[in-house]
Image (cartoon, rainbow, N blue to C red; front, side, top):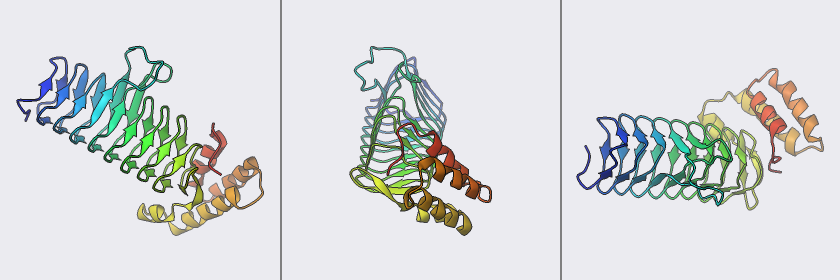
Length: 256
């Protein structure tokens, strides 16, 4: 299961059934759980934990030092959940002590070729980052979000659940849940109706989200007043609470 050309530090902890391809390099304090496949020429550095049935394709670099000039060799970590797919030339870095000290990736995510996840990012579950999408440091991407190819997310931004960014989006503010955005800089384009239908959101919930979008973007309401009216809609459709809470708590303000 381990190619003879792979170099694995004695301090690494690999489950018995892990596959490791030719010329892969696995450093100390790396833990790889059952069912994982580590492709040729992959570099894993630690402290890093990789959950079960995750596949990392050739030439990816996972768990290396953060690209932060403040980083001075402190012990920080990377935690990756189960059933993730990390494709060719993707880069995922550990955290920094200036933040939580750990970069975190949940379960069932797809990071396509050339994607980048910087230090202290938090990625939820079922996220797709298409080719060359990149996250600056301290970014949070919530469940079921999709970042189109070559999308770029500024540090400290949040990308809400079930949102969709078009190819080449430049995201410098928070992206509320359920939205479709696009452009340079990214601006709202409506709700992610097709993605919501695919995830079996009820038609009446999608209609309520359209009303919430109009309140946020197509009226002259102040943001606080729009949020208050969205909370009223959420009494009948609790899915809207996610949107109202996100907008109310946004630290960088939302895309407009």
